[in-house]
Image 1 (cartoon, rainbow, N blue to C red):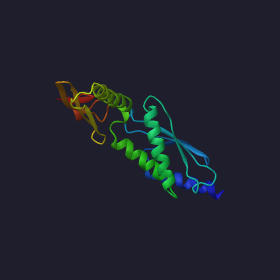
Image 2 (cartoon, helix red, strand yellow):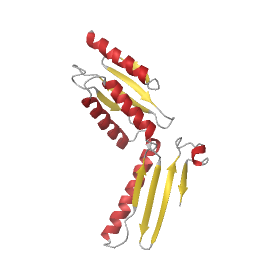
Image 3 (cartoon, rainbow, N blue to C red):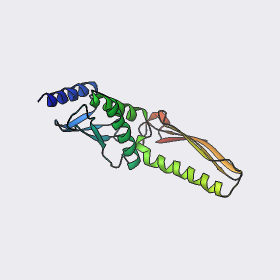
Image 4 (spheres, rainbow, N blue to C red):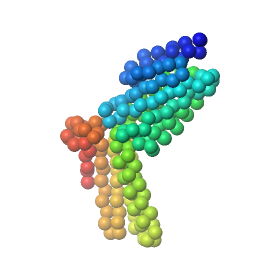
Length: 187
């Protein structure tokens, strides 16, 4: 009974610290929670409390859906399960704190899949250029997740273009932050 009470107390404390985390289901064995910064950054997770919790760390599972592609699911699960393993107590609070921080500071969450495709496209163009054994400059992509900024430099033989792309914080919607566009392209 004290094990169940301590889990209930821990969840209650975490809920008071993170009121924006919605918990529709909570039992002594698991809880389901969601957090969203915008409708396009909603992350749903299941926290499972194994026998022997907190000595045995809780298990975090992130739901894969239209917002959370496989790559983001894998990254978040790895990171959040590591947070739980490193925390001797108050694992729910620590996991939620890291998730909320990630979602609130990483403006690429709603465009994770498209961004991954862009990175792969740049890497593919570089590998194609490398197979030609040319001395041309390599294309690069640099990501600034807290600013939602992509710095892109594309090279093909004698031609090149450098640009910055800023993702609106409300992407794929838009706000005044990018002049009424879902992203802002600066050449």
